[in-house]
Length: 431
Image (cartoon, rainbow, N blue to C red):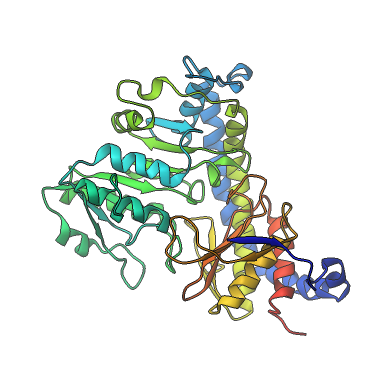
């Protein structure tokens, strides 16, 4: 991703408003109110369930003001860490949790679980096809510590034409060496539906019948608090994610989480620190307050984001573009994909979102190679926290179908402001 300040003839938004785009956009908003009302009601009903659960988690863990400080150094007796991990476990309907700034990303959290649980000769079945780009080098790469170099076999089972789990295809791959079922909840940079909680529950039921020795590991990124339940509640053994996505509530400055059964969480904890140390060390470095407050705010911010992304889908479909999910679909992740079909249009889309951002709004984007991606990527991320897709971002790889992926948003209104400019910049509704 190239970021260069542009002094060329980029449109000034105060002049754009003067051209009357507000009238066009206001007409769209007025037209959307009736069809979107029941969809937004459904999203807010999920928020009520998830917000109540997170509040109860704080109360059950008896979090006090003195638990918001944290430690440095080794993190011995870090009561902030202990309370934070208790609240996460309860919020995600799990037995135990690891929540650390030392876990750098969702990909890092996934790798901790893969490396900590798989031995040479083990086999993994991915129930949702190819994993996200940044994880592929950890699995297939020619690196000393990749799963391939370790002697672990990773099978990808593509989804059906209806984006459903191919249980027959999975069954054909089961052997006594099958050690893990891998599930990626979000669509990543693919054109497919996100994997729902109901589908994860079906995978867990299938596992009990066909391969009871296998561990279910869920990449939960972008899926947190989008539905009423979390993966551990329906049979997943582990679920992992990034603190700068949904659960960080835009306040967590860094970190990742792992939630699941007590035994497995304690086992992979030795990969976070060192064998024998496990969960007993690791300073919170002064971020406990922001991580806890972000978690508490997360159900509401996810709800706001989903309402804004639903409006985005409605507008883009109204303009004749394909949107996934569609505006009235049930959602399982906080990502809205829009198929643009042209590299220049993808660049224009992300540049427009960047121009609507609170940070670096004057930066002019170009696509460029990024670590872990096979194609150049353009990424609009004018965020307070670097790469925080709990804030409003938009990105996409420079490959067919040249889709833009919108994520996050602090409020429905923030997304609406960005959409107003997108409508103008992409000339979606020519006057």
